[in-house]
Image 1 (cartoon, helix red, strand yellow):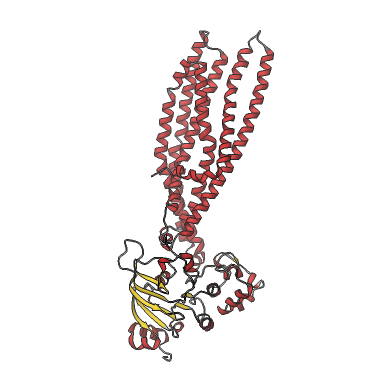
Image 2 (spheres, rainbow, N blue to C red; image 1 turned 120 degrees about the horizontal axis):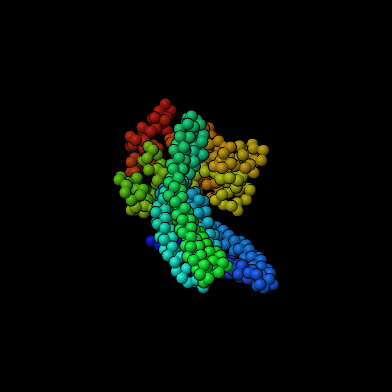
Amino acid sequence: MANPLIRMLSYLRPYWKPAALSIAMLTVSVFAELQIPRLLQSIIDTGIPGKDLYLIGFTAVLMVVIAFIDAGMSIGNTFLSVRAAQGFAADLRSAIFRRIQSFSFGNLDKFQTGQLIIRLTSDINIVQMMVMMGLRMFVRAPLMLVGSILLMFSINSELAGIVLLILPLTLVLTGLFVWKGQPMFTQVQTKLDRLNSVLQENLSGVRVVKAFVRQRHEAERFEAANVDLMNQAMRVNRFMMFLMPAMFVLINLGVLSVLYFGGLQAIQGRFTVGEILAFSNYLLSSMFPLIFLSIMASQSSAAVASGNRIYEVLDSTPMVQNKPDAKPLGDVAGRVAFEDVCFSYGQDCGEPVLNNVSFAAEPGQVVALLGATGSGKSTLINLIPRFYDVNSGRVTVDGVDVRDVTIESLRTHVGIALQEPILFSGTIRDNIRYGKPDASNEEVVEAAKAAQAHDFITGFPAGYDTEVGQRGVGLSGGQKQRISIARAILVKPKILILDDSTSSVDVETEALIQQALETVMKGRTSFIIAQRISSVLKADKILVLDRGRIAAEGHHRELMETSPIYREIYDSQLGGGIRL
């Protein structure tokens, strides 16, 4: 598998100009810095009594000028490298988000929310830092290293040869830390995934936590994940803390060699004081890049680990996607048919969730789905808009296999009110017209009235412009579900799906919603999942599901006579009432 950092260079391509300019400025900066020790040597050796003082002054001024050039180039390099790295990270972040948006439900079942958040934040930040440092240090260090070595040879090739013996040791040491460090950094990010997942679950379910007085349990769960992350981070730091001392030992050995052998040559008159000072500076200039590279090596290990995790998302292929020859679905009458459909979640499942399901919903019919929890009701309706694809058989709309049309065109004909109403931050008006952003205010009000939401909305001081908190905080469960129903109604779909969408409203409100929906559902093929059998008594067709199979099919009167399961459900809920 290719190095993820190399693969990510494609996201840096749009910013090649600032990246190239930053490297050019860095090259000038390194060249300027390499002149300073030579000029310092000239001052020291010229400063011997009887030498030219004018030359000393000129050289000092030249050093100041070079220092200003170096500073200017360094500032420019920093600005441009940050610009390129920020643009790189923004594009990569957008690419991951677009990939997540393309995922089908099957892909989202694989990744936890916390894991995706970490990849969009922490992992990208680590890679971004690596790119920014790379444009500064990965270029600077080799230039400084090579330039310093060449200049050392120009001063004293014999002494330079001795010093070069230290370089292989530093490279081996750095490589060892990179090889050992990368798996450890991967574990850090995995532990961070776990911590973030616990945090996300706790924040989203804080009301349940408080209701069941489980604060201590959640605190202990978070503490366990937090300590686990801390311990792994400490293991990494304990491992990496030996790198810097080892590097400094090698540097000091190099300086000691220069002072010893250079001193001997100076005593013999073959080496000047200025040359010793210049050589020592170049030695440090060649060693400090190795320190930077070793630091970058540890950062590289973390970046490679994060890059692999990022590409877990980017390389994931949506399980549901358009065929190459898929065509848009035009106007439809709304006939939905299941033909010997089998479906199971994942590849290693045992018993299928749906098994040989066949039925047809004619245009304008209301089809109700009843059955125990886990019988396959929600799974069945998820196959209509292709949230999942069937394992065998087919689902058709007006006789066309849903896999043969584009997903977007298919879903424009389907309106859905899910079992768990999801609202977004913004106004109530924005949430209702989420599926049709250009809807007029009149259309919004009409949909809200149909969902029996208009009265409570106008009861707020700001009415339809009332701000909704995250996930609908501030609204009751029934209010959120009615807004969700209004959102589904507004798109005026030919196929309407109500997934247990009246479970959080009282019986009176449910009756009002059902009355309104009778008008709304005219001319539309509607699927209703309901726990209350009273919600489906007037349905044109009722499907009774049992363990993934259709156990009975018909309208209310037929099923009361032919289906023991349906009759049992009816008696358990309305046993004391009058049978229709």
